[in-house]
Image (cartoon, rainbow, N blue to C red; front, side, top):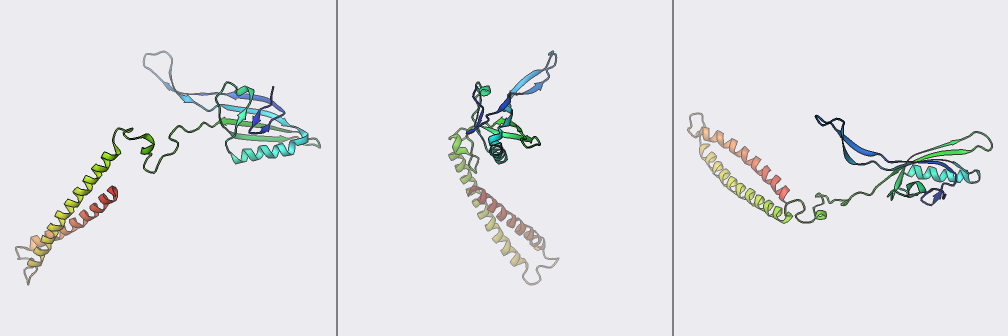
Length: 220
């Protein structure tokens, strides 16, 4: 039986290899049903646990190699007879333990646990706008070009509203100037309530301009 391999490193004195596969089920209790319905959500990663010893002639170098692989945490390839029927492309070293027996000829024993690291499903990367280009036009139920037209309409409507608001504010300014001539701004002036309301209208105009900036920021 060939020795298991992690990348190009051969585990020559592996003594025990255990492979585990666990399914991921959601338990659903159905009224009137004896037993529990198990809804399959997928499968957990295949896991492989290896126990063995490092040969004395190369124990120090082999221990360093395994420690470095475990420390980096990079994906590794793993081949062994026990995974022949499994479709495993890459794995990661979940844990690594080494134990050295005390003495002049102390033997180093180790235990490695590897877990399957499957590739991400496409699209693995998305653009900053959510990756619409990766899905293709209309894949999400709308045409991105039509959305741009709607945004243009919104921007145009916002501009028309602000033009009308600017014209109204100009009229308010003229009215305030008329009401403030001489002592016409006194309490008995019939235009005094208009002057007071003009201040509120001016404040509203400032909020409208802020809204226009927000809309133009959205629509570009």
